[in-house]
Image (tube, rainbow, N blue to C red):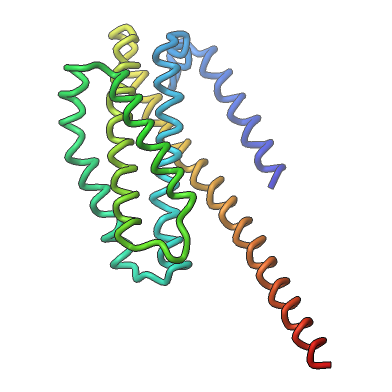
Length: 214
């Protein structure tokens, strides 16, 4: 596994160096000399990781751990998707009126708080609670993504706007895939550890029961 990670990292570095040396690159990395665009790109990467990983981990959790049907799993995530679709034009108007900072801070706060509560869910967490948490989390992300990306693109010269859009789209897809893979790996490792702990605890109880009978 580590070998493939090293090969991937070296390939990525080679690709970036190659693009920087080209007069007409496929991805223009020089746009990162603009600090506001670099900041907005970093925030967009974090949000993409959080969004795509939740879209993958939530169905795994509710179907595998909780035994909820695929239909109910999809219905659980439906309100969040609807909220994001509705909020897209609304956040555009709010961005024109209040700017990106207020929306970004508010949205990131909602995302962090709901993510914290997601870390506390268990077997007894109500289905309605999961729906509300997921919906509010997507609501917070909808307040961040468009305003932050637009604010970053606004700092670029008009000639570089296509490069900025292409870079943001590429990084969202790549970061979402990498983040999902990373968090699924963490989940699988934690599942293995918890299963071993439960098995050891069960074996210990059986040994105590056997010793007491003896």
